[in-house]
Amino acid sequence: FITDSAITVGGETLSTGAYGFGFSNDGKLNIFDLANNSMVSVSTTKDSALRRPRPLMMTMDGANVRLYRGRDYVVIGAK
Image (cartoon, rainbow, N blue to C red; front, side, top):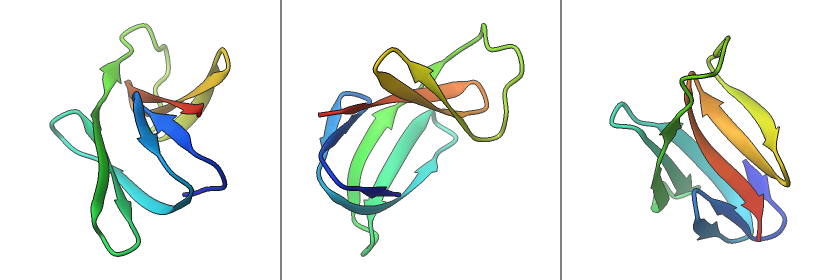
């Protein structure tokens, strides 16, 4: 994904740039720069109340966004 301003991902700051990301089986979201250097690795939260989980989706959470993989999510917000 591409950010045009600094954001927070799971409480960690991510500066302006282009990034790749992936969810690991140990409950983490990993974000990499285009040279495949690890930039951020944050733990996900499980949302057991989510009725119909999808493979990948985003929902609003107040002023922030939740990025889901199934029932696991991280909160993304403006910095």
